[in-house]
Amino acid sequence: QVQLVESGGGLVQAGGSLRLSCGASGRIFSDNIMAWYRQAPGKQRELVAAITGGGSISYADAVKGRFTISRDNAKNTVYLQMDRLKPEDTAVYSCSHAGRLGVSWGQGTQVTVSS
Image (cartoon, rainbow, N blue to C red; front, side, top):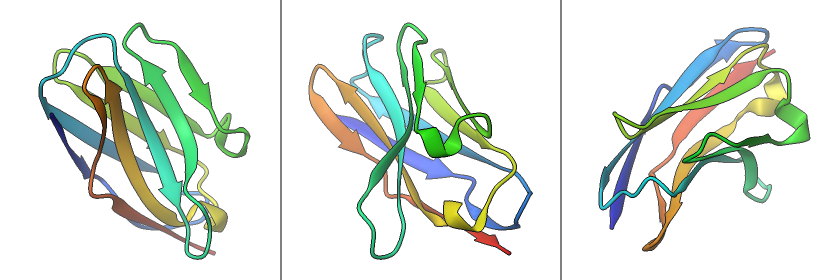
């Protein structure tokens, strides 16, 4: 299976930036999809951004123009650069790896944006 470890969360003021990282280890193939999800208190988990092994990218409407997902295949790492953060971006952010062996999840990292 695939193990995922996120880092980079924290507390930031509205308008600030954070960069999340997610390192993957284990049985990783290039034809996978890595993604960032978030879950705010009392809300369902939602997809934030996803990137395929070939570099195709998609974003949730709420983060388009503010967040950037990228990956370094040599390091098996996916990043989420979050700019112009808003209080409504406050959530636990988790990365996922979807590949030949199924879907794996990281433990999540808290992002808190103060107004």
